[in-house]
Image 1 (cartoon, rainbow, N blue to C red):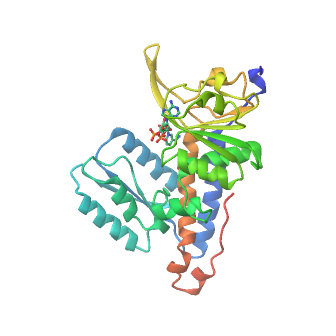
Image 2: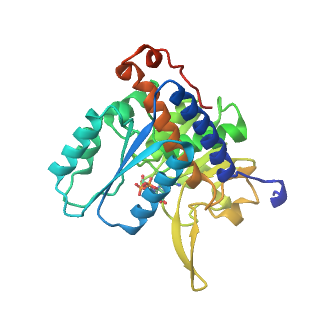
Image 3: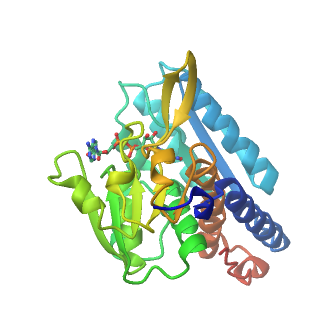
Amino acid sequence: MNSPSSVTIIDGKAAAARVLNDVRDAVSALKEYDLHPALAVVLVGHDPASQVYVRNKVLRAEETGIRSVEHKLTVDTTEAELLDLIAGLNADPAINGILVQLPLPAHIDENRVLQAIDPLKDVDGFHSENVGGLSQGRDVLTPCTPSGCMHLLHDTLGDLNGKHAVVVGRSNIVGKPMAALLLQANCTVTVLHSRSVNARELCRQADIVVAAVGRPRMLDASWLKPGSVVIDVGINRIDEGGKTRLVGDVDFDSALSVVSAITPVPGGVGPMTIALLMKNTVSATQLQQPALSTHSTRAEAPCLSIS
Ligand code: NAD
């Protein structure tokens, strides 16, 4: 049993601020080579949560010197109109990243839209070219939330070689790319899902647990090995004492008695997602560099690494 004071509470806000600082430096350096990273954000409809997410993404872009271009489309926009817009953004050399805010209205085929984005501008990392590249260990644009989780794990543990990591959840957005990134970092990876048998026992063997289920406080101390590191991706809105609050997929107070480190909700993974989106926009700009090279200074622009 831990004393809760010996547990590291992983500060996602501070980690995100460090990533954003690096992004700001990289953007400034790129501008010296006449490269001006720009992110197009496409929102279809008026979903209030999506509007908040888009506003935050645009704000972070401005803070880091990335130019953002918002495309707000009405809810009755057709799939063909949206595909036309994406084709235009793909062809526009002044746009480096394209983000289509999900979910899309039901009459639009989400997969067709994501597949229409140029993989080199796919800052969400959802195009099958990038999904395939990730599973092959190629240097491609990777989904922001799992990449943010990897940053937090490296910050907390350093080398992840040989660690047993359990990912709870197998969505295309979080669980599967998370498992691929952990494998790339030489972890032994187990993926649990809604049909897993003995999930709790398997999870209790993990050095690292990444919870991405969408069920409030599902994992309590009985799911966790003493000394394990827990990354809680879940964001669940619950009513408690007449007030709504956000909680994760992990029962934070219960977990404190066993884990060595854990992310809080809010203030853990959430801030990292947007920070990694900005990092991906810089990476996309760099990946496009040969195609964009119209004069020698661009061709000579350095490859800026962001840790
Ligand atoms: P999803 O609904 O697409 O996937 C949930 C997964 O959980 C599924 O693969 C399912 O098999 C698994 N699951 C369901 N019940 C289970 C059970 N009893 N045991 C084991 N596995 C079970 O959700 P998602 O998009 O991956 O999101 C998961 C959570 O992460 C949500 O709370 C979401 O809001 C949150 N999220 C947070 C961020 C962030 O930036 N922090 C980003 C994306 C998602």
